[in-house]
Image (tube, rainbow, N blue to C red; front, side, top):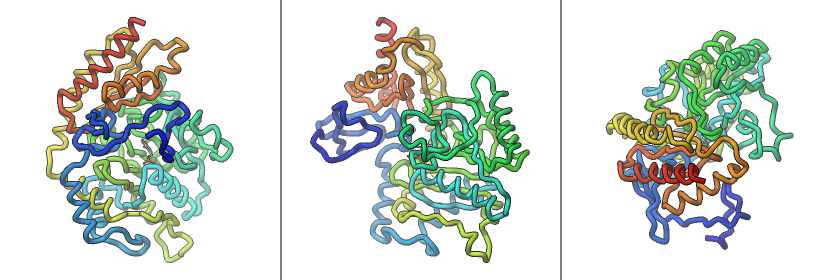
Amino acid sequence: MNNSPVWHPFTQHGLGEPVPLVTRAEGAALYTADGCRVIDAISSWWVTTHGHCHPRIMSAVCEQAERLDQMIFAGWTHQPAEEVAAELCRIMPDELTRVFFSDSGSTSVEVALKMALGHFANRGEPRHRLVVMEHSYHGDTIGAMSVGARGVFNAAYAPLLFDVGRIPFPGEDPQATFDALEAECRKGAAAFIVEPLVLGAGGMLMYPAHILAQMHAICAKYGVLLIADEVMTAWGRTGTLLACEHAGVVPDILCLSKGLTGGSLPLAVTMASEAIWESHFSRDRSKTFFHSSSYTANPLACAAAAANLAIWREEPVRERIASLAERQQAHLAALSNHRAVRNARQCGTIAALELGSAEGAYLSDLGPRLLRRFRERDLLLRPLGNTVYVMPPFCIDDSDLAQIWGAIGEAADDLAEA
Ligand SMILES: *Cc1c(COP(=O)(O)O)cnc(C)c1O
């Protein structure tokens, strides 16, 4: 499709790379117009959880489409949204009592930031500074970029991005992270936003649960709100429903999207504690939470989410996740001592490693070369620089998974020889 008017996201069209045309998807695979079956090793950018075109989700959307397509959600409601909200309150931590709908991960983050700032504004407390972690990613809108890592992806917009407090990623020296967080909290920060356990777009960087617990404790000590951006980590990716569960942490605000509909339709929620709801609850209209987008709580997307929640209730999802985590571990272990592999790591169903040596100028184009190589092997596997990660839908079978890891192993062999 090289004469198309379509401008693709995160795509440099000037490089002239082919843009495959996909005509259908099923389970862990995409099928292209020219007859290839492509294994979706990254869940179509982290969204597809149970597999593509899950029959229950697809039929729920079809049934919903015959009744109600879209409607205003300001002051009106509909059954699929009520059902999703009630079920989320049932399965998510008890302290998260309120559910605000939107339509993407970035928007759920914008909503979270506005809720946190609104909370303090409505209480007449002068707190507006946000604290973030180095290497974080929270989306591509201006507010979400402001709380994310700065770099080539947003250099052009840097003058528009607002200032935030940044704490180091908890690597070798977690104490430095705790100290920086405590210093920011002491200065009267409003909120700390963080990706629990795995920093996705920052390079699948992982940190242990006890560090999340400690960061939460520091925030709590100073009344700083904890915003957990679980847009990528929720819905079983890290082995549990939420990554926060590993740490026994309940955030004040929780962002969910990607797997909320099983990865089938765009939908997001921002869940909030009762205290945040209460600071907006008033007879004073100026304390209203002023946020909406046209497709807030779209009924078709909510029907997909309700079906996803039913799948979590009624199918052996947790067993599938445990099995995938185990199989990922075996494949990763087989490569972890390879000469061309560094930092093999895993969190639940997510496995990641760096390919090639740490030095070498050619590394700058390793990512695109790997991408091309994997595409030639009919794999949708999109490295982040020289970080290769595997995050497939939970339904992936042994043979597909072996093909993915076989191709990574081959790439490592070639690099070791070069
Ligand atoms: C993908 C992602 C987002 C942004 O979600 P979109 O739906 O792409 O806007 C935000 N935060 C995290 C952690 C993500 O992985």
